[in-house]
Image (cartoon, helix red, strand yellow):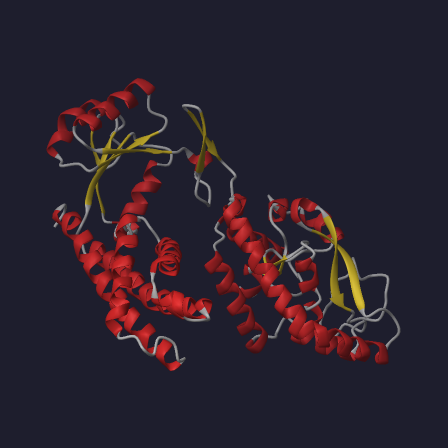
Length: 456
């Protein structure tokens, strides 16, 4: 089942995907009927939509699930296909034109498809990984040139069996391990007998030899991939820019550098923060403000300079939880801190003191999710102690973040805590996805409800 699988799988996937879409349409039909929509239609009127879905799926080649793809990519592909499906449905499906509330009807249809088709496609992806883990649907691969980062790639093949890559060994002039099959010259003699699918070339090989290997691969219909050196083995995906016929590697690009990603995150921030402002802050600010004023003199809001995107300073808003003092910027709040008022203790324990930061989100200074902003004196200290500390300012700071839901919130008592925060912030910045933001938001709610140890 090495190559036959790739012949059969697109047909199997498309057929199963079509059946799953029919089931999704039937459930949508039932739910829409409950809401009093399309009561005069029989279910067969929905069946053309299954054909539309299959057409979109095939044209977008959703059946192509790469052996190194993660589940996030499957979700992203589903989201794009669903967008086009709903767009075509809104334009071409006649029953939708005859009634009111088209947005509601499309929303129900899209929601059902997102849940059911998402479960189906993630399930297929999981089964495919499991199938490859058992040694099926594999690809034979060798590495030409041992040294540098080549052994790390071999370790990936050994650990990630779900990639389905059968590593046959190295070809290198320095035969220093039992996985070395022969010299570089031996490669051209032995390779035709190995039924190869993939050749990985170490970047430090001589340019003439690299060209010779690529020419050989082209003649034998074998895919070739180059292994970057250690300086490019970063904790994120690399991207490329094209200048005419010349390509360069974008070494420190991040997902939010992409205009679509940045726009989507900002739109979500604005919508979410607007809802919080209208339905919560509109009554919470007067109520909390009155309680703060009744207990102690001073302003309702505590306004503190913090570093935001590109290290630009902004005024971070919080409900005042302490009596006015001269050490707010330099001395962190600690357990049983005498500066904290009674209402302030409640606000800090419930994290309600952070709620005004939704106004910072509306003003463009912050995001819902991102690295938590530190005070300017803390930033000045940490950037001299922590390597690549300032890289956390590549994006807008957040009301919550990955470090916070992983347990690194509140007072920083030792260097390990800030190093862990920076490491998690760096991971978030380099691996941002919309789903990761949603996961962090859900986990934030859980932390607020069940884990209050570091909230003081």
